[in-house]
Image (cartoon, rainbow, N blue to C red; front, side, top):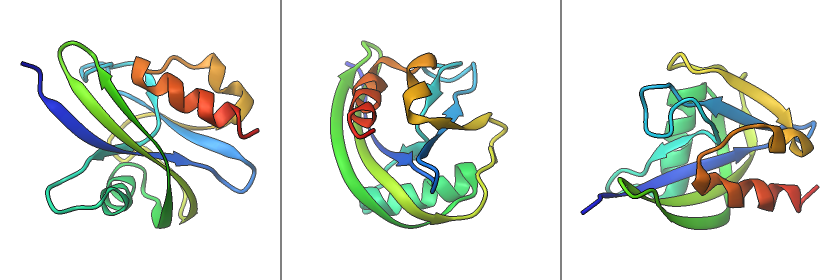
Length: 131
């Protein structure tokens, strides 16, 4: 039986309406693909708390607040994920890959040019409807 992971995902939008992407390390599940930053929700944490913690640890952003966007349940076969996706527009700092990962600000309409894990397709579709 595959294990289920609850993940807080941030769609981080800057003042010029660009979205922050991070590239997964090759050795990770779905490695080499681009993703919206975030991480596992720990016990007794809300999605927003997890996202604020993870975005500081991963990309060095100080997030002030998050807004729920959507939830996705996806089964990769070897792993099931619940993606709890939030918009993040209220933050400070300069994004950098603190875990050695590439990070990049991308115009919304250019998201279609990046390879994402299958579970992220619905997030890209949702972002494209907000242009």
